[in-house]
Length: 514
Image (tube, rainbow, N blue to C red; front, side):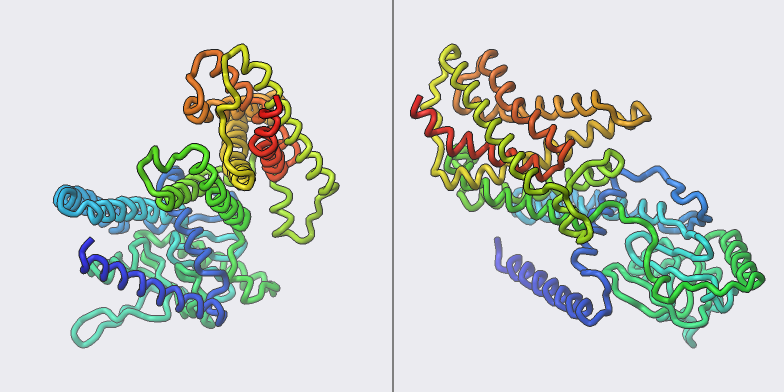
């Protein structure tokens, strides 16, 4: 890594830190309502969501009047050109730098791939966020970039645009205006292209718009760049006239106009809390995996590098799986009671202590059953249980916590929820007990199969040992799956934790006795 590259990275991170500090100061000053860093994370995930999953337009609220502003825009053709440029540039740079500077080649390739995904997601989000008129409120949300909500009573006049020019013939860009345009403003400035400005909506008083980071901006008018704005303008004028004719005095305050009425896609507080737990789980399980399996040596990595790679892997996997689980979990009706109660002070959990004790008991009982089964089948199968070496007890405790959080997030929260969601899609009716049993059983089977690599590193695998491995892990999968569906995710995690404590901390002592 050359000095120039290191200096470039340092300068980049310094600029990012300065920008982050500015955002934080604006947040503390009240110029941004929500935490800007949380807002950015949510929007980045939603950009990826729109990149892969939301290419079919949905009507949403049936009472809303929808008006698309991307149709006829130059943005589509500019997007095609930019995508071609990014693909060609990524290939050329990768070929040119792969041998001479592989690190820089990989970084540039990742950045190019991300920029392609981002542009696709941005365009698709714009397609799926038309102007809406709902109960005399106009919702203008330009994808992830900016948003404005106002009531028809806030409109002073709607008129054809009045473009002003400088002496040199350059168009004067108004500062306190909200631009309803599919073309990103930054591309308009860079390439000097823009859609035709047709109408402007002038407000009686300045209104608050929102930027990408949630920052507030006072705007005096909204500029309409739609290709065929006549239908929208007629609908807006009709709403204004109807409001004037009825002479209604509505109690909507100015601050009410600043907030979206749409329910968020997922519960982001629960999402980030679960993501944080999974990162903690990855940090906890890494030293256990290093001590027990020597995985870092197998992969040819240092302990520190292995730990960091594992944390990144869990962060990416959990980020995707948790998002999908919470998104489809609303339809399935998954239970995450303890975490939900943390963010909802009015929500109480009945018999919480008893449920925790019962879950812990079921976990210990599961661990004991697995140990008993292992001891029964080990001799006929020719398995020497004493050959299994467990690390220090405290590493076993850390590993048990990490496995409980990470594995329950994937095998129960994601897989069970996904299977039940598929049943809903296929059957088009309510989930039955049979569906629940099938989902639990399938996740338990996958749970058992995923332990194959660990089992094969300790034993020479035969059909008998493989089936025994599926049964051993399947017992736990069935118990944890039932607790997840009937009681909640946290109780499945508690049971998994105490089961692993029994297996990896208490179990080795029992094996020595026998």
